[in-house]
Amino acid sequence: MKHSSNKGIYRNYLKRPLDFILSLLAIIILSPLFLLIAILVKINLGSPVIFKQERPGLNEKIFVMYKFRTMTDEKNENGVLLPDSLRITRLGKFLRSTSLDELPELFNILKGDMSFVGPRPLLIRYLPYYTDTERLRHSVRPGLTGLAQVNGRNNLDWDNRLATDVDYVNNITFIQDVKIILKTIIKTIKREDVTIVDKAPLKDLDVERRISIDN
Image 1 (cartoon, rainbow, N blue to C red):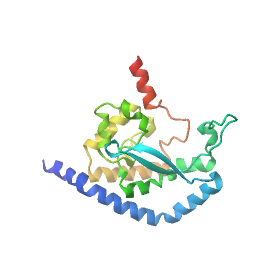
Image 2: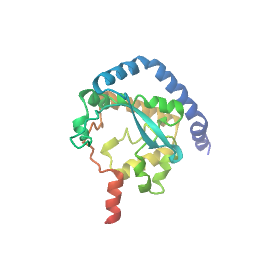
Image 3: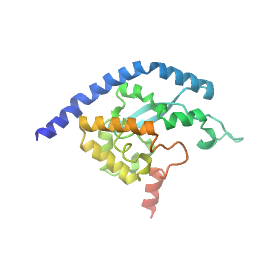
Image 4: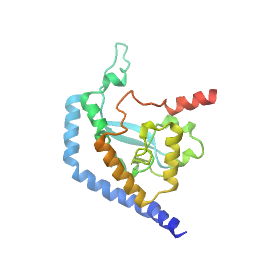
């Protein structure tokens, strides 16, 4: 019982203040890197420098997630955007492979939209396709990294990926968060389990579950 209480103290009272303090320190320390990347993106890709996309967060509340832009806005003769593989640049591939494109999410953490560790925020259109158990992933703030990200990331099928998110939610501890952050740093340095573009082994969740329902 005492062990459960200690987990509750970290989850309910310490996790958010630590996120705020550490994200603020990280933004200050990394500000020269932010500026350098912003300049490179501006030169290579133009404006806007920041890519914004709505994602579901805590209690499925929609927020705007920030990333550095990695693709151009090139369109075909009919005004339709070209495939991602044709719009991503060498700089964009580098930013994705090193996860530097996700640095602006530190501002999401500072604002309280996200946490350093938690289930990754997925697309809004997936919301209707979660099971009741899988919806528990939205009972905590989404993370910059998470348990699924250090245990296979895009190499996991959807069922295992979402089950891993729920397992994290049910067992949040300070020690586990530290371990996930350290594993993330190691994987980022090694560039493991990173999908750059058009290499994801999974169908989108909504497509996969529609097929399952139809069958």
